[in-house]
Image (cartoon, rainbow, N blue to C red; front, side, top):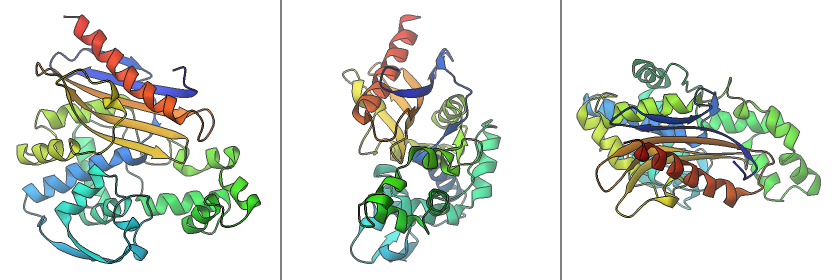
Length: 294
């Protein structure tokens, strides 16, 4: 890409199996893309009768995983059902909802399902609260709350500079695809293909996943959709360095393409708009190439 980032990409024609790839087997940092896995396991357990989707939790925002959207950004306590937490997780990338659901479905069960789907390079290592706090300590702060305060300018100029220090950030576990929540572009399209074919779980569970992925509020892959096309996807971002998205784009004629694009900026918080635009352009160009192969 010309946008100041490294990229790994895999785009797969779900009907023919034809593909376009750039480093498709490179290990990548998932960021919030891993929420697809949590949602899949949640809907699978609902379909199996292990979880009641209408079960409600009493939530205090001050006690939940930090995040710029969702329940942790609320001002007041709220009661919410598990299925609405899943919708929050996928539509607005709610970190608090994610950790609550991951704790309920179990990380081991998530990883077992990924393995059963053939995603052998994909691992969920920890929840988001753990990842954020570990990152903060590795950068030199007591916890994520202190790191966030530093990045907001509340702890002075020195703390602000340290909070975004390129070398410190890059050494953090959260940015190491051998130690954090990880996958490869090919694993991601493999999982999406299984979900779109009702093979990743029961048909009801897969349908629920497809439905909730279509409700995502913002998209990068979908910025260059042709007329009549739809997208069901999940983005992921981390500290101005990682920007990703994985999902399925369905054209008006019914042809569907799984796309997984993972980027790592050369410098934190630089060329953000350009990188996000290139994610959409890259996926669109790959799909155009696949369609031209008919």
